[in-house]
Length: 254
Image 1: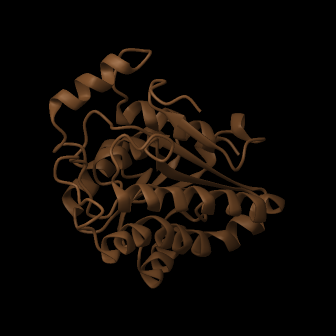
Image 2 (image 1 turned 180 degrees about the vertical axis):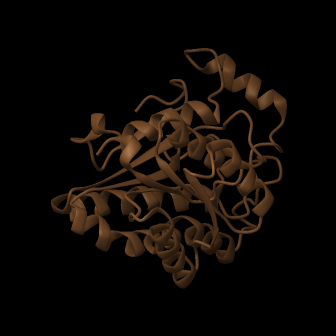
Image 3 (image 1 turned 90 degrees about the horizontal axis):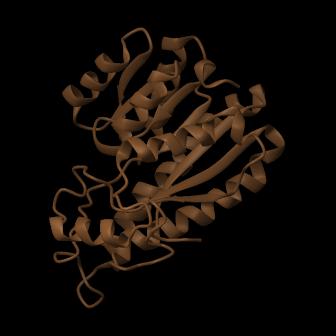
């Protein structure tokens, strides 16, 4: 299915990477569901930039199964077409600040659980809501957002990194089970992005170090990550599933 014919849900897309991804899909003509929890004004600003005829903002906490189900139903009623493509991007209450991170002797299970719910549970909710229509259409694209810290935990964010490792395993299981239904599942893993709300607390010196140690000599932007995400939704990736593409300018080579 061409990108222009898809209905794309981007979770947590009122700001940061999610907003960049939503706008990127909008530019290629896709219909876009801009999901948010509390930032209604920002979500509507993203919709306005894409165009009201092409995008809609829908509030839903992706950790809540019933809210997710209602979001899918609202999107289908609005566009007259079911969601074909899910970008599981939402990040729950996390800031990339290595100096302030919880270390192993202070971190609690609840910290892990919060990130597992934001990554794994949220993906389960969106997938269970979207799978029936995708299977009926024999087409679906699931794209999860990971991190290069799984391969190279230069900063051991124990809760965040572990949840993303679990999400990678989940992505590959999804790919195996849903392949016969024409549904692919892949992960796009970035490094620290320049610059989002989540990375705003990161000292500038860290970005300088990344730039110096990256082959292409730059820090990846949300817009560059969005390009890779579009690839996994496009016809060019039709034979690719269960993969994890690291998009960080070559900082981590896998």
